Image (cartoon, rainbow, N blue to C red; front, side, top):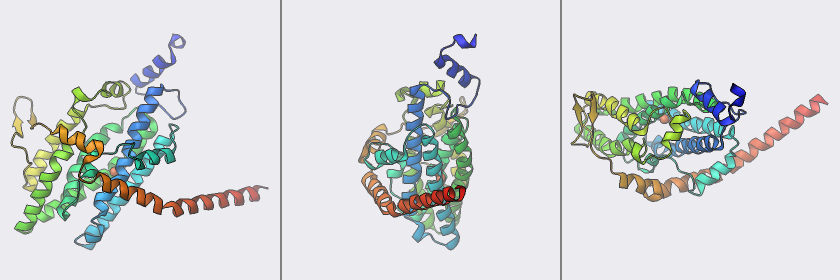
Length: 316
Ligand SMILES: [Fe+2]
Ligand SMILES: [Fe+2]
């Protein structure tokens, strides 16, 4: 019976059977395109995400904090590399992907267009931003595309370290002076809503979602993931001793979930479309880093070429 099925049907059957799709397998164009877009946006987010935190490496309050932050920022570079590599298995060129990022054609997570104003922001970013990322990414460990799913497994392990280091910064500050406690509350006030926006538009305004669910690239909808994040974060905020800036946030006995206020979608789209507080600065810093890194790429290529020649002369 199977051979009477179209390529497309057979592909869907494999997905429905929870088989992983691998780089050389047949796949519909739409599946490939969707994955390239999603994986490259994800890769861009990892490397742009290094910028707001890299900003605080030189000003970390102790050697221990500096080491942890340095390790975290390096992890994000690694995540970017795994993900660019995963996108390359689908036939996307890394130069082209980076070109799209540098010319503003490609998107990255909007959250990184907000500034990190105080040391407490580094804690809030680790706790909330990495926390929201984990919520998204744990579901992606089961994505149907093998190279993406496998990259996610390792990324998620590292993300949970990031989240803990953030939460630990805030816990420490909450045991400190009134000024430090105020700083924590202020950072949480500024990062809460943008963190909720990280899950993307509401399901009703998310046109690509149905297809991604059918292809099992996505396992849970934006709104489901956002709700899980809220449910997870509220008890953590209580332990910390901070509040979220949402008067409508309260536990609903009937649903068993925390209900929350309306997200400012106008702000979301404004930042997505390039007009957030730091969009220009982030893009400029990224382009500069790429240009200043040209000699490293040249040197690596020259070295690889030399190795290749040496190996082939040994064979001969
Ligand atoms: Fe990451
Ligand atoms: Fe992270």
